[in-house]
Length: 374
Image (cartoon, rainbow, N blue to C red; front, side, top):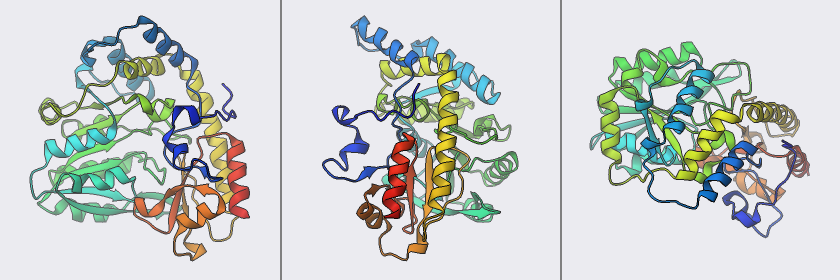
């Protein structure tokens, strides 16, 4: 796989590129990559299309896809799960909205960390609930949760659910064992359910493990863990993710809240997930190496630009850039005037920052840096 390719995405109507269509602005915003899918995924999809039949397919009947998820969790995280813990969902965004419906009542408060990606921040209000924000803070140059703030928020009797993002989007940190232990202790002490969005968990660039929330002994019966092949293998457009819910009562409540509203995942999405988790290990390793080199280049160059600074993210293909040193009114407009289209920091909860997507050819990053320095 040549990750340096720059495919023309205009014919696919890619959302990332449609936003700045017919401009000279380089899109570096929405979190998908510019990498063509691994050949085993394409081959599996071709075979499924050649079948020619796309009638109703109950996801639970795709035992191969279920077994692939089980094997992946064991191989990647040392987490032994049961197939019946898996609930297929058409994306993590509908999944954490379903979790809100399942575990919250009118007047309740949902805890979220900030900065965070916009759909997660929006979820409480969409469901007519209150939102309590806890800061993500830097300790010794590394982003982590403000655990004192989490403790205070969880102590509110109205707080019933904490939606956590791990690895964190946009700051890229990965919770370590001590941090996950603290999350577990706080949530259990105050009877707060945990919904952990772990969609970037297979994009860890440093030598640190991913610790799934549902694998923690104190959280297994009180959590929903959200994962997908979508970010890692660039198949987000196929609308397929999964929740892992060990607790039978928690799982039943989740399924009940989704009934009649959330559609089945697609047959192509199941096919792609199965192929990704079974046959794409080499592609995955090559991508991580390429992303790590891209990250290191981008962090170094961003920190050379007066007014900008960034810490090195341990995971994801996203860089959170602090632009407060520019002392401009609108960092997004400043970037776009330079010819770069990042994700706007104000949408994540911090107007002085912006987020850059480095899941692309190095050539694009070089172009971006040249533009930002101009």
